[in-house]
Image 1 (spheres, rainbow, N blue to C red):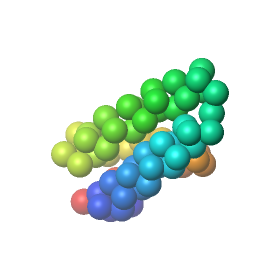
Image 2: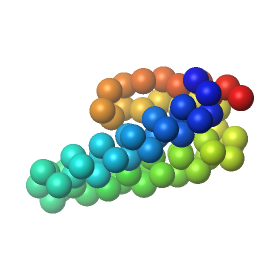
Image 3: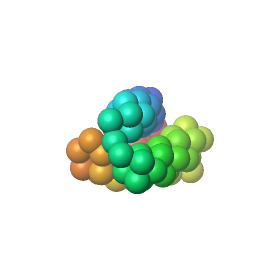
Image 4: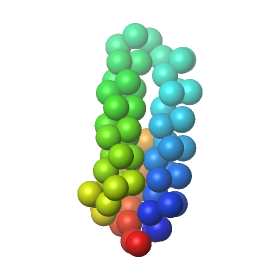
Length: 68
């Protein structure tokens, strides 16, 4: 997947996590908050080229290989 597509996927994943967090009890919302932070960090790493492969578990499991 291109870097641009990978960044778009991560942005969409973050938005889905935020939307999903509103309907959760506090302990599950905290888990979502941790996942949001991980996705944000991954987003930065992919943008600057530090990460070329990653796996997302939410909303569906997907393995991504980033190409330039």
